[in-house]
Length: 164
Image (cartoon, rainbow, N blue to C red; front, side, top):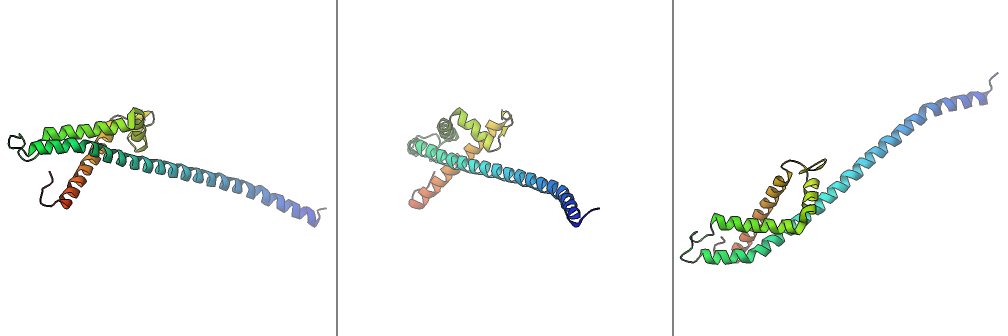
């Protein structure tokens, strides 16, 4: 004959057998979501830090190439300049390549590969096909934007001299 205590224990064990797997599944689900959130947050913070460093390296490169650019602009303004009063496309290309080389030397080969990977230009086993070219295009665009910003700031400081 079952007593009230035996019935209570049996009900308790039945509830325990039903609830424990649900609680375990919930704990596993929460830990997976927490793990994914931590991974995403870490990756986002790493990418943000690398973008800040990339912008700093581009600014540094444009500043380093700036003196050479001033020399070319001075030469371009001379009466015998092939480009007239502006620098030629070839001279601009040389300056852009110098700035790109400066940024690459700042990062080094390992840093460029890591940057490509973090910014999505990399594949599972290193930099994917076309990844470095995509990263170089991005860096080149940043260089051009930095040069444009520098020109605009020079034009606002000295509005009588046109920025070239």
